[in-house]
Amino acid sequence: MDVKFPPGRVVATPGAIELLDKNGMDGSSVLLRHLQGDWGDLDDADIKQNDLSLENKQRLLSSYSLPDSAKVWVITEWDRSVTTILLPEDY
Image (cartoon, rainbow, N blue to C red; front, side, top):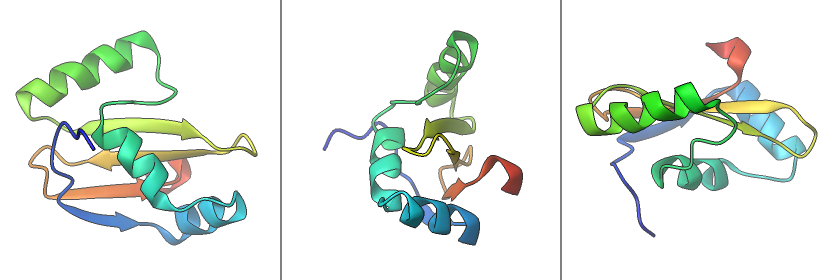
């Protein structure tokens, strides 16, 4: 497993856990993609910003579409202390 940064403490909101479960998934699949630098369904400008944020130790955000077309976000804080799996409306 080639990860690009440490996740810190990993947490998830109840809504994200419920939605992932409804889609037959757990948080590990989106977490792994995020840690490997696969930012998911972001536009080119946001992907470029994440790549710069990775180098400059700023906050990282990924967005993933689930099988039912709902989205979950994964956010790692700038200091890499916490990574949160959440719904966009939880933000």
